[in-house]
Length: 249
Image 1 (tube, rainbow, N blue to C red):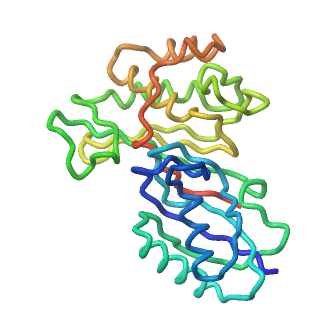
Image 2: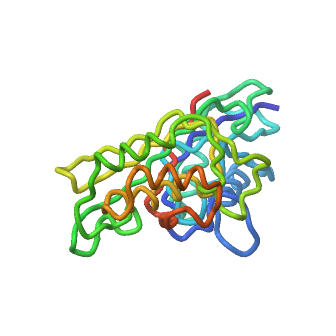
């Protein structure tokens, strides 16, 4: 029974997130339906991580097994053909046959995300549902300084959803950088770690926006972290600015 690893890109707009749920469209279900249509098999597609409703991906990874041997090109092309026919905004970027012990979630060594802010007064058109709009320039240097207070191993209770199901709030942030492009119009928060808590990056993004607007200081972020209280967090950023970029194995 061959096992396949697929790398996936998707526009999360209009989907209820990655995980299959009753009566709502999800990324996982769309891919499973496409696989069934070309192979006749009901499979479970296991992702490297869940994304919330509205979150996008450029490098989500998943695995599944089939009873029949197919070439990697056949798997990629057949799934994409049925995703297009279904009208889904999902694409399989690559397919690769992998050993039986590969697991998209548990074999992962690091995950990379980007959160995007777009700074301008006019309403967004092309970037609508792709970035979080800010009506003025952000102080990127202060945001980056504050972000460094969150790098390393910490108890991130302040920055996780109250619905988070992780057994421990302790995580190690390997990277949390704030950079700017397009003469300051585009601001990106780059986050890398082995694993993240529910809403952790969106909580970081909302908090760091307050720093960029000079409503908080980097010391305020440190105090929020040390409080270990969800109420100490800044606002949770909307999902549509978040992109799941890559998984390292």
